[in-house]
Every structure is written in structure tokens, then in C-alpha cells.
Image (tube, rainbow, N blue to C red):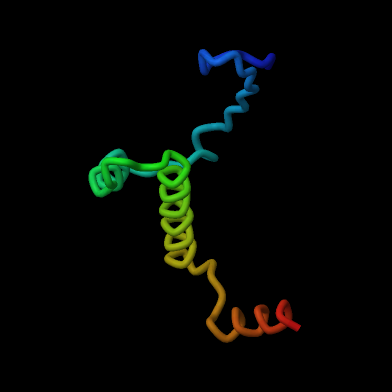
Length: 84
């Protein structure tokens, strides 16, 4: 895909789209609540990071519900190996 100027500022940006199943799949209601709770002057980067964190937490909770997580003891062992 060739770069396109979608900003109106003369910036060329290449857009790579992932299939819908790979992208953030938060519910519209969740996003609306996040936006409603924001202060009037919000940094867009902060908003995107916040939405990304919420998506990661949701996916992690789904993995745990499916039994795909590891025990607290195993997590502590892995962490202790990294901190050596």
C-alpha cells in the first residue's frame, strides 16, 4: 500500500490494517464510558494508551477464564529469574 496524506499536513503515512479479529474489540459502551470520564483537556496519546491497556486487561481476563494463565507461584519464579 503506498503512503497517503490523510492528515492534511503533508505527512505521508502508510496504513497497515489487521483483520478485525486481531484488532481491539472493545465494546462501544466501554469506549464511551472512558471518553465520558476524561477531563476536558485530554492528550490523545494518553487516551489511546488507556484504551490499549483496557483492551489488554480484558484479553488477559478472558485467557484466565479459559484456564490459560499460570499460577502466582510460577509467575514469581519467572520474575525471580529475570531479576537475577
